[in-house]
Image 1: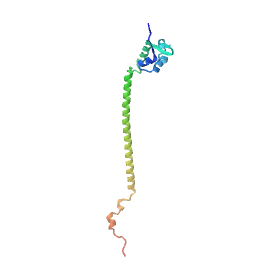
Image 2 (image 1 turned 180 degrees about the horizontal axis):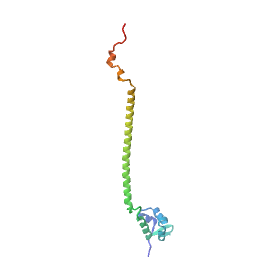
Image 3 (image 1 turned 90 degrees about the vertical axis):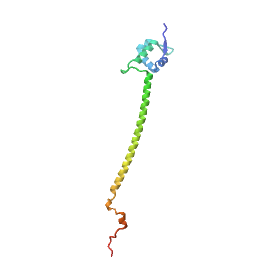
Image 4 (image 1 turned 30 degrees about the vertical axis):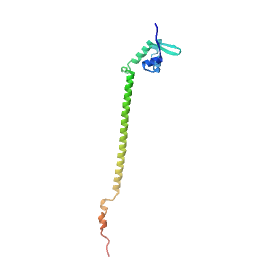
Length: 145
């Protein structure tokens, strides 16, 4: 019986995970389970078909109560979500800028109104003013001798 051995790089391409993830499983997570299925030839780590199945099964386990999803479909979903959220963020930032500009404009209007109000308070009452026609035709209040 011929045992088929695969390189870690081949397995990583086949499973769609990084070589580092496979080495983590070899050295930590599944070390005791994979030990009989590993051979090192000329400095290269080779894994038997049974070892590959053990790695596949470990990837298919339920994570946090959720069934595993096809990695590519999940990545597409998250990419779409990121794009949508970035678009929403652009809209919110534009809205915030517009609101800030509106607040600045309203503040300037309030300052102008306050200055005008203060100027009106400092002016003498309208009764003390002499009307235009009264100035032209004013009587001479000084006694004539």
